[in-house]
Image 1 (spheres, rainbow, N blue to C red):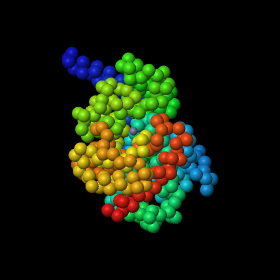
Image 2: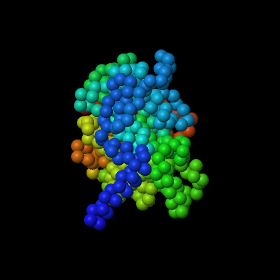
Image 3: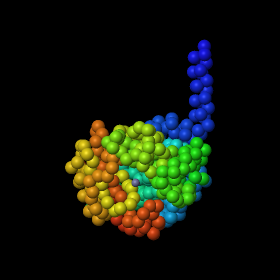
Image 4: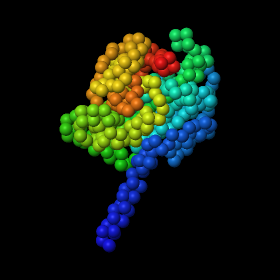
Length: 375
Ligand SMILES: [Zn+2]
C-alpha cells in the first residue's frame, strides 16, 4: 500500500510541476506534433490558434519587411500575416514546433512542394544573431514580390518555383532572440526566467562574464533554458564543446535534440527529400561546408562555391561539432548543407550592417533553388 501511495503521490507532484511550468508544458507535447498548414486567415499550431483579424494590409507598392534595429519575433509574425494577405496562395505558412516559452517556429513555403526538390533556409538559431531572421524574411518577400518578374541567370523565378520549393525558417530560436533583444522581461515562464538568472549567476561565478545582467543577456545565444541549439545535434556529440551547465552559450544540453526547437529541425529534416539546406549565422563573412564523415561532400562543396561566388565570403571546412549542418551531412539520408556566417561586426549586429549583409546575400535563395531544380 505504501508503495502504491508513494507512486500516486509522485504522480500528483509531477503533474503539479508540469502545470506550474506553464508554457514549458505546451512545448513538451510539441515537437513534430503540429505540422499544420495555414490556408486562410488562421494559423493553427499545436493546440493554439491565431488569426489575421485586426491586421490591416500594408498599402500596395510598400515593402512589408523593414530593416529595423531589433527585428523581433512579434514583427516577424505580423510580417508573415501581411505577406499572406498580399500573396495568398503563393505562400504557405506552417508551424513546425513551439519554443519552451510558447512561441511558434514558423516555416514559410514558396513553390511546388510535390516536386521532390526542396531547399531549406534557416536562421535565428542563435539568439543574438537576429540579423539572420531579418535577412531570411527579406529573401522571402523578394521571392514573393518578384515571383512573376524575376530571374536567376535567365531562368524565371516562376519556372523554378514550378519545379521546386523553398522552405524559409526565419527564426528557429525565438526565445533566445527575445532574450537578446529585450532581456528577462521577454520571457513569460517564471521557470525559464529562473534558469536564465541562474545561468548568469554561474557565469559570473566561473568568470565567463563580468557584465551587468542586462548587458550579459544582449549576448545570449542559447534557447530559453540555456541550451545552445546548434550544439544540440548528434554530430560528434562527445566532442561538442560544453560548459556543463545552462549558460548564454556553449551548453550542449543533456542529450541530442533534448530541446523542442532542435527536435523540430530534426523532424523537418526527415520529412522531405532535401536538395540543399542553408544555415544562416553571424558573424565573420565565411562559408562552412564540410564535417568529418560528410556523406555528401561533393554536393556540399558545390553549394559552398555557389555561395562564395555570390557573397565573396571566405570558404572554411568546419567548426566545432554538434551543429545542424554537421548532423545533416552525416545522418541517414544525408543532406548537402552549408553554414553562411553573415556580417563583419560583432553580434548583436547594429542595423547599420544591414546593407552589407543584404547586398551580399539577397540572391542566395534563388541560387539554391536553381541548384535544386538543375540537380
Ligand atoms: Zn551562430
